[in-house]
Length: 292
Image (cartoon, rainbow, N blue to C red):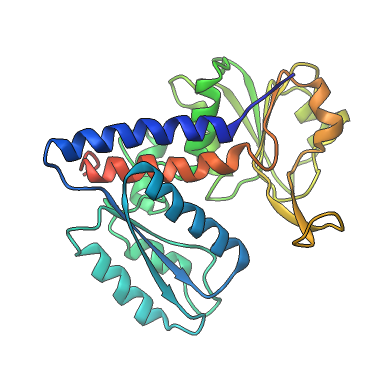
């Protein structure tokens, strides 16, 4: 069993990006600039945004954080999106999700200029991704493919089961895994809450990508010997052994599943760091103006 170390891979990629940014600036080009909009004080969102700001520093990017209280109106938020769309110095920006219930997330996503949509959530980017055109691929699916590629895991013709059908992970990663390419070219089955015989389907899988948000859903009896497991789950569960009073759990029962695997991602330290570094890669693409 080999542990897929997302922390190490993301560190390597950040160094590669920083080297490219240094070359760009030495050639007199503009420093890449990422902006993040944070609404309210959700603990998970605060953590993610802080990590993104730190990653910008490591990659040599300029970063701007725009904060709003949870009672910000939809109109105020949309006005900020419009301002960022028209700010020539900002190459890409994200509006951190989830948003308060009185704001339509879809309306905000669609208001973002798709050429600055480094989260890859805009319908134009999603549509372009689904037919294999240049686009910003949403960060978590892009990070998963990066890990598979860097570890040389052969996906061609592999039986891949994706657990979960979210717009952020499940659907896009299924689409990417079935496209021609490497990683890719797999035979993909998407399972969700209405799937029958989910254990039997998983037992046939060469690769399982678990993105349900259900702690330790994937158990030892669902995994065949030698399978590759990518665990996207990050659920906070109560803990008496940590200072915070909680710890992160993946969708996979790591302790019992790991011995059966050829490769497996830990939680934390697997897919999480790759999500942030994929956002950095998208920001670099945005700065180079290659998506139009």
